[in-house]
Length: 453
Ligand code: PHE
Image (cartoon, rainbow, N blue to C red):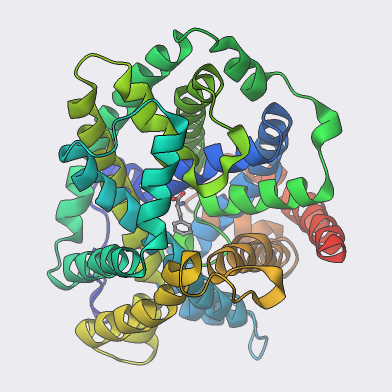
């Protein structure tokens, strides 16, 4: 979507709004991160905590974040400047969001690079194997090669920079919109194959039968961070997208649909992966490699698997592109609207900075593997800082801002489209959650999590 600073672009149809917002939410978070975090944090009990975090904290924050953007019709920083009482520094939330977008893109572009690489590797027939050792070795070989890691990451960065510069983001959104249902169907097909492998039941048990003794504060903090990351909230993406929303769009309904669709994709990804993990002898706690070793193994057990494998990684690459465009849009909108930069300059500078910062993440599995600030590799550090610290902090800030500064009446007015689509009951619940529940929950979880950390 192009955003000249004078005349702002907007979404033209109600379905377009839904598709674009979904395009930001659905991405590697569903297909890569959700399964690997669920696997590493005990399975079903993590899923339960994640569901609670999404409903009690994620959804209300998403609703008001979109609302703020639509009210002010501006980038994240300007939006908060406009809506806050004079002299109060709420815009800092937007500024922190811009920073968070950089940190996320630094590792996200690396993982997207792995996905792009797997498109080619699977087309060349290099990764189709049911042997956990062979699958793991192929993946390790790729991420341990500094050259390969950097090459794929930079290719991805140039790719998304070019899409934004050529002003074809709309085209990409149109493609995403059409291909998302295909990804959906493919995930269902993989899920069916995965569930019918001998020994698959243990995987469903792992994913759906909670053992609450496995819950620790660290896993709760991770689940909360995932809820923010998944819905693209707490950092200004949804504010930026909200600024393109039409005035008669029903925000709570749209946000709820996006949340449900997003959740469905994640759970389908879980059903595609975990039965196979248990049936084929992989380890659920394999970490970031989980997707890349398990999925080829499922396809190796399917007729026509080598073709479907390529299709799967192409669709995943497209889904990740939609999410990356929405991430890059946050700093680009701030730089071009706030500092009056041309869009070209904002994009080029952002992509160059990302190549520099991102390479520390890309090389954290090879040359920089032993550099561990705070005991984490750069890759893990950027992920931890953004998902577990910055997005929840942004979420607290937004909840307090809307719940206490903007107040109930303004919120009802902003959400009910000036009385047109009034649904005051829903809005009251949202405001109540934002005042009393979300900030307290987030603060408790973060404090305890940080203490353990
Ligand atoms: N929600 C995206 C995903 O799950 C990632 C994202 C996070 C995008 C924050 C925008 C902002 O892949």
